[in-house]
Amino acid sequence: MQHPVYCERCADEIGSQGDLVTVLKLPSVIAAYHVRCYGLEAKGLNAFGTPLNSVSLIWLMVVFGLLCLFLFVANSFNPAFLIIACIIPLLRLGSWLVVERHISHSSAT
Image (cartoon, rainbow, N blue to C red; front, side):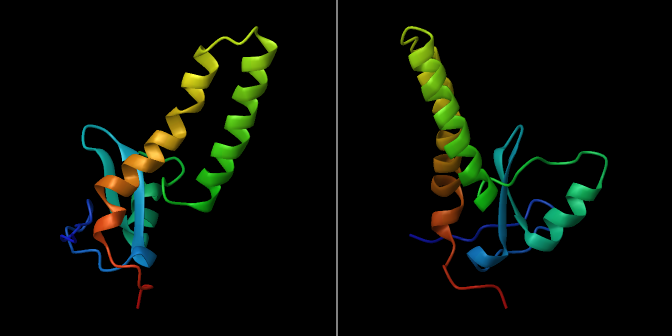
C-alpha cells in the first residue's frame, strides 16, 4: 500500500526512490528528503551523517558487522557485540518500513 511521502525540508511529495534520501533525525527518527533538499540541508550548520538508503551504509553494515563478529569471538562470546552489530541493520530496516516501501521504484525525472 503506497501513501505519499513528503520531504522534511520543502514539504513536496517525493515521487520516486531515485529522488529519496532517508536520514536518522530526532525526534521523528527517520526523515525523508529529496536528493537536492538533502544536499542543501547537509551544507548547513547541522550536517547529517550517512543516508540510511545509500550504498555506503551497506558497506558500513558489512564492515561493522565483521568487526563485531570478531570482537564477539575474541571476547569469549560476549553477546553485547552481537546486539551492537544489529543497530545499523535495524536502522536500515526501519528506513524501508517507514518510508521506502511507500514510494514507487521508478527513477527520478
